[in-house]
Image (cartoon, rainbow, N blue to C red):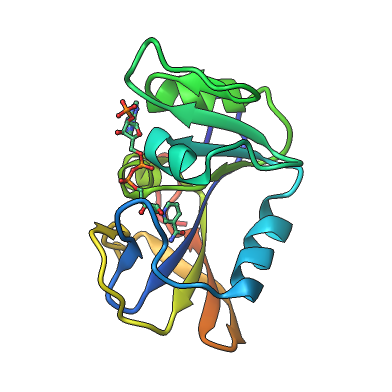
Length: 168
Ligand SMILES: NC(=O)c1ccc[n+]([C@@H]2O[C@H](COP(=O)([O-])OP(=O)(O)OC[C@H]3O[C@@H](n4cnc5c(N)ncnc54)[C@H](OP(=O)(O)O)[C@@H]3O)[C@@H](O)[C@H]2O)c1
């Protein structure tokens, strides 16, 4: 959750072996999965790491982008910059829609404890890669939906425990 009470949603595509990236690239091409990311995030605010931003190379149209970097001199046209996760979520609280965390590995790991929901495309492949999705704690997440598609399943996970730590 952001300071202003907005939902924080992690959106990722994860292979059967946990790989999400290889160098700058996502090591598969599934056109329907990319269209799904676009539809899911359109109109919302994306929070992404500088490496993921560099690999895309431009702000994604129709969405507000906050890039996380520790480099105080970094900037790019058409995006907002934050230097730590709290600052990114604070900025995003005043921006359109939900806060969609769009990767990569470092940023998913940093944001996992702040997330209210995850929308994960589990891709039925075992590619080579060097970036992995963080381990999921089964006690913290409950599956709320699963849609099978050709080559991948879209799974929605909701946080099981309230932010105050009470069982929910
Ligand atoms: N499969 C998917 O759904 C998916 C989605 C997105 C990305 N990816 C893949 O993931 C890979 C990139 O992931 P990655 O883990 O290497 O990099 P990343 O998370 O995209 O970006 C890492 C960079 O973000 C900045 N950063 C990270 N945490 C920060 C924090 N807490 N505070 C301030 N700045 C922070 C730092 O930038 P500075 O170095 O500038 O300080 C860091 O070097 C690529 O292969 C990409 O294709 C996959």
